[in-house]
Length: 256
Image (cartoon, rainbow, N blue to C red):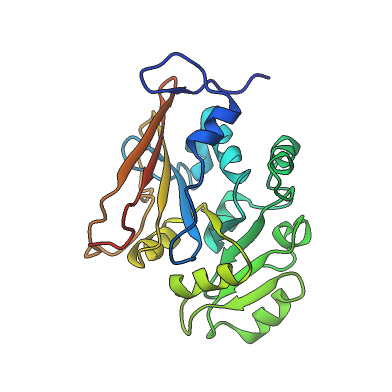
């Protein structure tokens, strides 16, 4: 099956996977040597971040194509525990084609996988852990249940990044200590909001789904109403039929 055609806005020339990788190329390393955080989301045109409880229901073939390509260049996938549960993260997160693409670029077949959970509400018997191709990393808070931590330590590495809640700056340190420089964050909205508030959102890759999604679904971020406005710079606009694939960068990640 041929891949979903993607073009630059205003062009009819289809982009190859190589050209898409160039369009989403990671910039030079951060000057302060912290990891670079790239968030990837899909949303409906009326702002919904999910449909019937799943963000994947809003995506199409073009979104899934870019989704896989973004994973092909990341050192680690960072995700909140709620997203792991709702989106069915388990087992091989990359198809063989994407694994081959990673090895061709000099990366290991699988990126690392880190899940953020302040309460450790995770089942160590789930396929997310038992079928993982690489040992997951769980980032939690010191106040989390010691019994849950002990159970998870049998199937994952567990790191503390905060006293009562996971603090994004400390989570960034945990990832940096493990050599992760390119972090692909796949949600959810609460994780996105906390990293926004900490000034740690360097990029947003947003697929705009050509659909209305009526109902009570939240937005891609669930920050507090008084959170400051954070301007972004538009890096590119790609198109696949009626779907838009946007990439924004933050010249200065700290909100103002």
